[in-house]
Length: 70
Image 1 (spheres, helix red, strand yellow):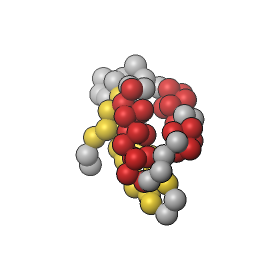
Image 2 (cartoon, rainbow, N blue to C red):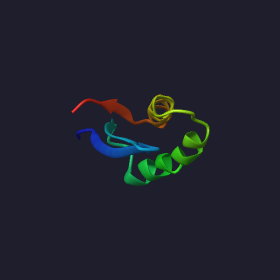
Image 3 (tube, one colour):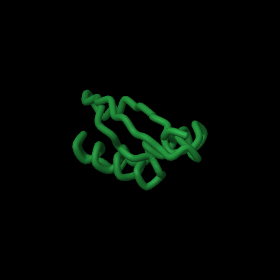
Image 4 (spheres, rainbow, N blue to C red):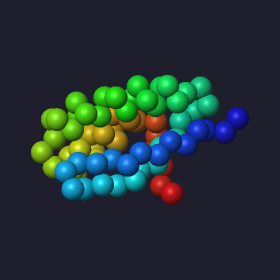
């Protein structure tokens, strides 16, 4: 079974970037949605878009979603 691909448009202020992630087949859409629900709390602690990008990416990787380049 192939890894699943997940796409998000990360936004912080006027900055926006589409980021792709993949996860092992055991991860579900519900796991992804649960992980996404934590991004607002991360944004609240960030001062810049670069800081948010780094922290959000690390957070999603900690949740089991690995960033990929497309």
